[in-house]
Length: 280
Image (cartoon, rainbow, N blue to C red; front, side):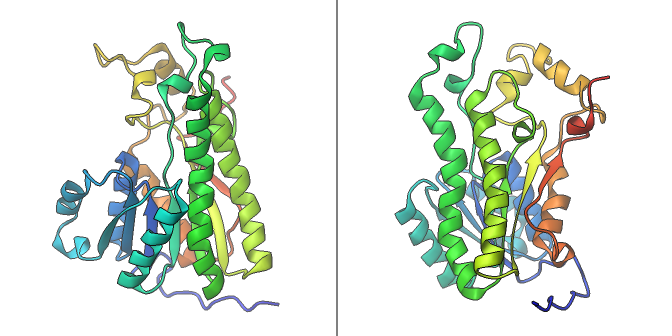
């Protein structure tokens, strides 16, 4: 029987812990990163597009920014991820946690009045599957190997509300995020049984947040008013609003901290009650 680690005096303490975060410079990623930096974590922010990095580091302030490394990486390119891992380990020596945040959807993979399911192009469907599923698996291989060697670590995947109940119009994204949730459970068992029970794998499933990838579905571009879809979502969200990016921070801190030492293989909805509401 494995002896559990001694509990930390501060169950939510992240000070000195090194967290790698893919897709970290999007709207949600920046909010999560800021919350982790405020709690003393060292951050390695991986993204293909580093353009938002300078402005984000300035918002963090000098003290927090000094603990942040920004690394260009492509989550679909194993050699790019290997180079990123080398850079991170050269700076921070080890990795305590990985957040797989890279993901998204394309309008071309979305059904609409002028684009039927039967006409969705294969390249757009493949893009959604590759980015969300392979973009979670490949970083888990690269950084998970390091955790297996150390016999401890945490992997946190970003799934979606679509993984519980597929939404209309976005077949590829819904199926891909269901794959992320399934992979989360598989990897949690695999890492605990094959390498160490001190390696934990979980996921969060954000509900509805206004981001660049879904705003065109939820708000009218011309007026800023909610679309019919946006109104339906709010009507089925007991808390009556879309999520704010900062709403994700608490659950992420919990799952990356000693407070969740006996938690692995779960997918946590952060959705204002959407997944609990039957509609009546």
